[in-house]
Image (cartoon, rainbow, N blue to C red; front, side, top):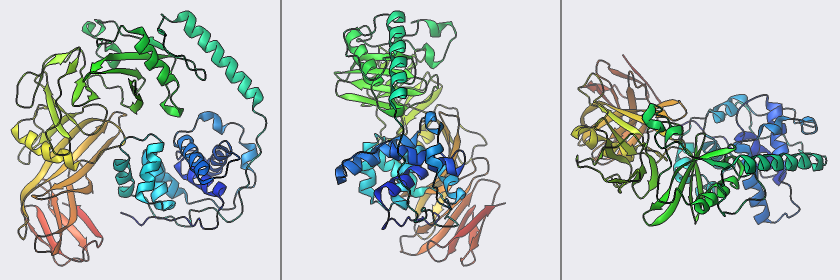
Length: 518
């Protein structure tokens, strides 16, 4: 990992500190002066007279939440915030590298490595921001490759005075009028979805829509065609409360449009649950509260309901356990099928005899595939015994990710025995296809007693290396490459030995190594 940068905040005002945090958390688009102006505008919009530590903490949460996904309107009328900018802005390479991180990971990185907040405080802040699985997000931030800044990333000592905002009454009046008109349209065009449920005062409630129960059988196999299922799907009061709760969710977690789709409403494990969809967002509502996650728009990936239960696509009618027995389904929901690993991640069940899906910590179950060392191509998507055994181990070695995975393909490109009593091991390159179309590949060394992430890999020509401590206590640099390739390492190493595509070299643990393969 590259050296982390640190901001000197000892003499800064809380205002300047918040502006700097907002600046680095904002998405990396546009000119830097505009970015700073938007950061100042966000901080100015959270100003309160209360200056107590608790009030400042709440203000920081509001600033970070808005900076993660800023509304486009903040870029309009930036004139007042563009005045009195510092003469020098932070290194664009730094903000460019941060912009490639997911928003929650970017927040964690800024708090951990620029604000130097301890891990437990970063975790608490992410919980306040309603980030799912905050510890995994912090791990992703710690593993992020962010180049050191060419010059200090803090702003110059010149103060950044708050901007006195002009009156917002005209804008507020226009917003209220627009909300009233949208609410009137929803009432005249809706079909009685309120059902006695509470109606939020601050936001228009979307109209609840349901797919035709047989639309999918006419060849329309998309998420839009999933019918509403569950014993509470006809309960207008319960579904109305779910829709109203989503309409009142904060910021970018709010229902994204004038309509939301009901996928499920029923009792799961004895408790009432509603699952709603809007675009690539899924909302899970229970009387205890609402959670909203980004889940993509893939047509067939089962939706996790908790407790090892999954809501299946209507055309997936023959699920099986990993042992090959029929898996019971009621109203589209499977019986509990938790992953059988100690960490709760890994293969879960087979679908229609053609593919295996599993839990990688996301809201939907991705397809898992496996390519053994001796095979020229991946196995069929339905995992066999070796693939299941391998994914049982790899599932716990794959870090939880901040965005949903649609498919995970593992190639065990090397297997053998580690030197000096290290035991049997395998090296995998796992290609992750995300719901938004992005792709990433990560390498993992699966030893007899440990699992270790070893950085990015090329899934077509994988090679990976890491420093490894043998049972004797000595450190070695290990590297392996795919069949047909030979790993080569350069750095502060003694002459390496390579046997069976495994490179072994002595050296100073942690010393930088350049790894290639030919």
